[in-house]
Image (cartoon, rainbow, N blue to C red; front, side, top):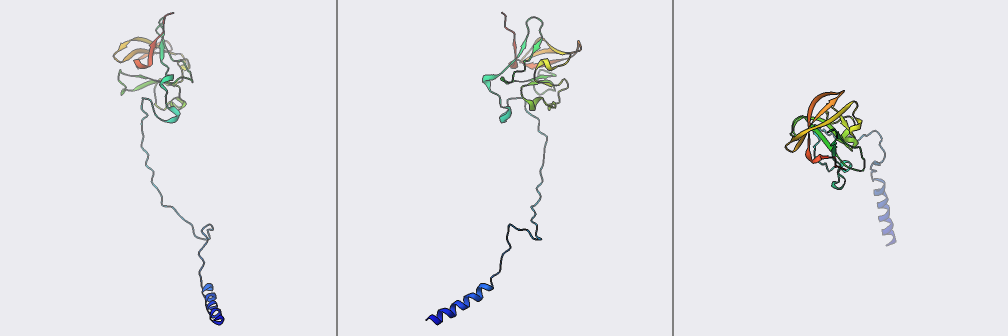
Length: 171
C-alpha cells in the first residue's frame, strides 16, 4: 500500500511541473490596457432665474433680502449681505423671458465673470456699480419700472420683479 501511495505521489509531481503560470495583473510587461474612448457631449444650458437647488447656491426663504427703494430720492439699493440670500435680475421688458440687463446676487458663481452676460453687469451690491444708479419710476404689473443711469445719463428702463423689491419704511 505504501508503494502505491508513493507511485501516486510521483505522478502528482509531474502534473505540478506542467502547470502554467498566469501573468501577474499588477505588473505590466509589454501589455498595455486601453479603455474604450467615451464621447462626452456638452450642451449649453442657461441658468434659471429661480431658486436653484444646487447646494452651493440654494437659497433659504428665512434669509431672503430684497432691494429697497428710497422714499426720499426713489433710488433702488441692494445691500451686499452675505448672511442673506438674493438673486435680483433687471430685465429689458416686464417679462422674465426678456433680456437680462443687470443682476445682483450674493453668490460668487452668479457674479464672477458675469455668467448671465448682462450688459450693465453682475454685482453683489448696488454700491459696486461705478458711476451708476437705479431710480424707481412706477409699477408695471408684477414688476417695477426703473431707469438705469450711468454718468448721470439714463441708458434704459429696467424691470425688476416686485417680489424682490420693497419700499423703505417711514420712520
